[in-house]
Amino acid sequence: MTLTKPIVLILGATGKTGSHLVNLLEPDFDRLELRIAIRKPKQADQFSKRGISHCAS
Image 1 (cartoon, rainbow, N blue to C red):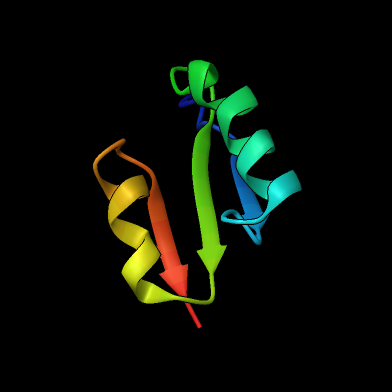
Image 2 (tube, rainbow, N blue to C red; image 1 turned 180 degrees about the vertical axis):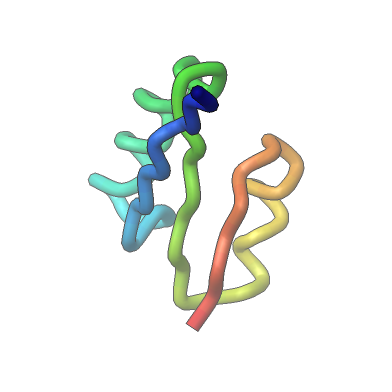
């Protein structure tokens, strides 16, 4: 049986609450797959450098 990591999607990852949540969950990368949604594609670089998948609207 293959176990997959749970996927966690954080909406508004550049906002006050969303960015705090990203920082809290980042140490758990070995147990979960963290993905974020942001409105401004220019802000995606800060997350890509940390290995976080993103989608921009």
